[in-house]
Length: 139
Length: 406
Image (cartoon, rainbow over all chains, first blue to last red; front, side, top):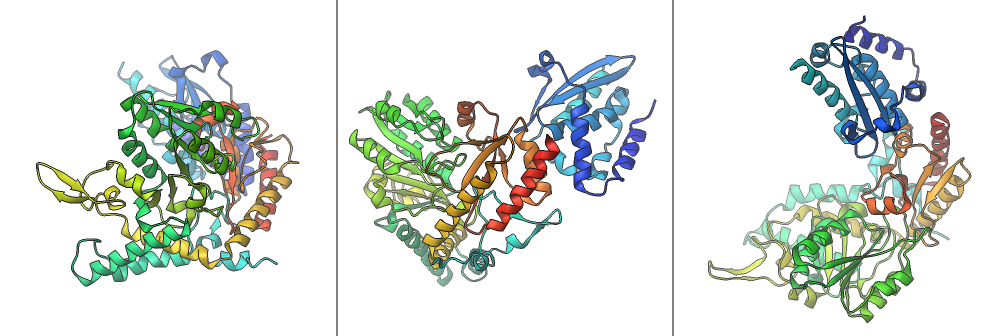
């Protein structure tokens, strides 16, 4: 099982091959299209993270001491970035989810999507993933 | 023969030379705020370097200079919008502040059951202050419906008017749809039942000639930053005797005549509505923005803008799955659209990567979004400093973005 940092480094490596923004976004958009969707009945208010413009739903399950996340969004680029976040943070222990610093987003040049003014729900999503980790840590 | 030379005018706006993500900036978010000409920017500097002092109270030279410049700004703005006296110009923080001022002050004079009429295409700033008033005073808010093409339902409007209607507060140009509302008709009808009329000119003052006396409105509000001035300054125009008849909105320094603990008397308008130290630099710089507009051939500038708007619409309509939100016959160069099932935020993000600034979302008009049953739109809003070449680039970038997202 790869650690969070191993996966982050893997993603940074993958993104280093893109020559321009178009290639990068094409990849993110493709990821968004591939992301396992939540069923419509899972898109409930308690799973919803409000961005001002796009909405994000996160589902959390705990098994074998690890947290498993699935998520969805109504905007495809948001969904692509979610897919990366899930690749990094899903199937990890609550301890690791809470304590590991997420540095890959900045390194692959997507930090603008995490600005609180971006209104896409991603900051809220990361907070949700971390707080899910914290919740299970305290159990 | 037009005397408006866009490339000359662009030189007055230093920010337009910027590169964004390595591409030349194409600024199509003028509905949110306009860029500022050098003349306005340096006026702010000049004020703080040479004239800064508080107004209306100093006996010293600088205070005198600042007061003079501040009051000249009032005079200049009064003349730009055709007010009959500078006393009819109240400086505010912006459109929102102006509407809240009237909602509070006029609201104090209203009774339970009195009606306020707004339209279905209002910005939240012309909805929420009235809802607050209705909660406070038991007044009733009525709404003129919006038709499918993005115009107002004028028959419903006539039906909604009655002798209970105390105020019509309506937007001149829709920030989301670009629709130009028929103010002459609306005001005349409202007057026929004895209602007062407030015009939200936040999206029209920079696009259309405005003369408050010809319009016959009682109040008109706009923001400085959308008309090439700085943020944090705006104007509330009100007919003088009406302003004088209203109770003040906020209390404090500058708005008083005599203060004792037993009873305080107030200044006349406009100072009655300008409690505290005002945005002196803002007012002076806003006046400079109007001075700048007067130095242009404004008629040609506005005509250039309208031509651009038509060119944009004509070139966009053939893009695949293009849907315009609002197709009123009479619009400013503001265009809201959706493409197939693509989320507006995705389009906005990819356009930004190509140096293009547009607005996405509900544009602070959520009820209007509900009306069209959409979560939001992409909005391109032009100004006279935009060019046909920028539109050509925008179309290429939009086409590329749609391709990537489909």
